[in-house]
Image 1 (spheres, chains in turn blue, yellow):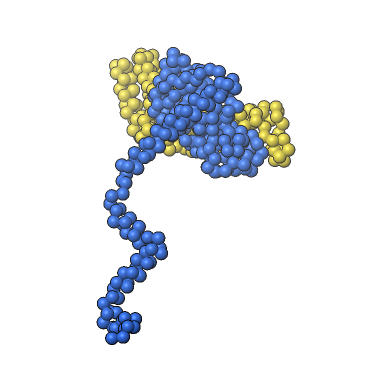
Image 2: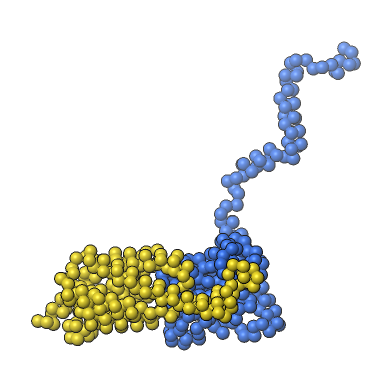
Length: 246
Length: 203
């Protein structure tokens, strides 16, 4: 048997024997070249029942909430400190929590009746805050009740600004669930989605409280450009509110 | 006049009206607007007790309702007129017992009440706008580009004409329809009650 016999091309039978192994080798090569695509996908497919479920997502969300709350408190303290340094607001704002005992969310008058009045230090003109920001201003008080003129009432006028463009306007109720923001500038540059907050220049309301989100903008309205604002606070479902007493 | 003179305590049931306005349940609302409880109470009272008593009740109710709702408008004239008109109708016309006519009267009354409110707001808006224009000059059209916006015009509180034409019309329609729908049910019971009471003292 000559020495080069081992170099000769394998016979049909042995080729058929090693063919599966060659295929396996090719497959492994493909896996290697594709950076483990099949492996990772197979792992994902097999481990899907054991993926972190809703409970884990909830833990993460609650951790996120705690973090956000802590950051918010910290930022508020910081903001308060800076405002005190600037002598913008010397007095410490204190709030009275009051239940909403009657609601008229639609109709000729849009107002809410609170179960706390002048005995708790509430006075006419003070800002009323609900979950989601400003709700309205106190219109009148009795010893144990206070009437809140909601932001949707046509008698309500609150100075606000669009935080992104820093353009001022008046938030005016028009009797529907969505008040109108009438800008004081000719070119407000507002877009749908912009957040509306109370004006830092206003003396009636605490500054920079969130109020609503702009839905549509009509730049050619008369006498001023206007935007329809969706309020953040659900006015028709208020049960407890806070009155900012000075 | 029988009820008011002989049993003035019954007039105290009018105090239920402001309480019902405050505690109007959410399911008894059409488009968020509650019924006009003042009309629902005044209609049977005036029908069974005559024009003078109806007008007195209308005046009292109007004062109560104005106390609940701040603003420069009043419901007194409309309720006064309605009380007097319904009182005359109860005296002069044949007895009104059919539910349909009660509903129709409540419909007309609520519409009238809403229209007087609309008119008052419209007049207030017109005077306010004129005053603001005098202060800041006419700011419309080309002037808007030149001078900017007149803040006095924007800061006017209250219903404006375009609000009244939009949301105001909706409120008027919803309240009128709801009151007219409730009147046959509630007013006929009250009418029965008042008439029985009145007859009881006449005996």
